[in-house]
Image 1 (spheres, rainbow, N blue to C red):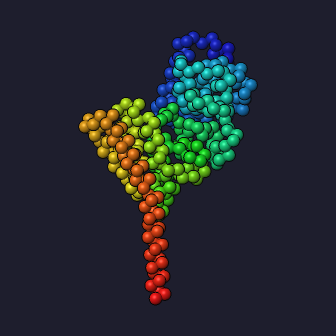
Image 2: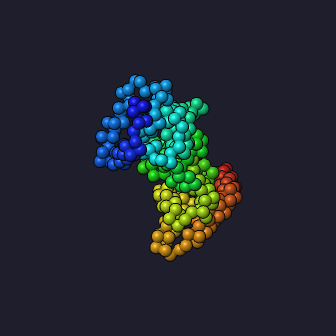
Image 3: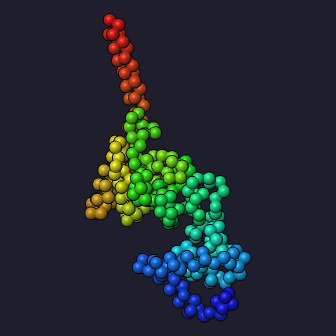
Length: 293
């Protein structure tokens, strides 16, 4: 077969690739593609050795079918034959910009161990898809195991929700992301603040609007003061950007000012809490003395 492929002219090869790209991209032909995608699993001869002997065009077609990604059929995709074989055999991750070896030996979580071909660095815990976006609030991460999840997937699965505050006053809540991999709760306010403080000034207007939209969705169900304030501010700034009532630079300054104001309030909490505890303690002593009297 490798010899036959080698003899094909460029027009025929490109025609085959275009047909497969269209098949992958058309939702109405999903059943036809899934049927094709299952064919390699019926072959017992597709081993490492036989695949290494294939023509590279064959491998590009096979990998595109296996992964459902038309990007492997593009001219600017520069992958070694060995890398294509490893991706096909699920020994290397299918994200062209990642290409991490799988499985990850030092990752013993239930997601990595049960989802074959899963990459903890760039795959969503919920939908198992990936993209190459970074410096964004569209992905939320776990502080403990460093798994990632699309913000919209986390909201849909109720993984982003209020939980007991980790640093704030007792009996208060904060918006948190609950990791499917390890069950750890990561607070969202600090995460969003870090993303905006580090990246917002570099975003264009369209990106800033998208990020504010993610923020208002993430904090929509907030019960705590700072979460509610951030939700309201993100909603207002998003609306003003859409209606051209404010510049991206001014919008960034407003959101930075909010973070600064909330930081000042948080710094005062321990002092207020300490004074409250002193008053409560004094009140207890007074009640005891009254009882003795």
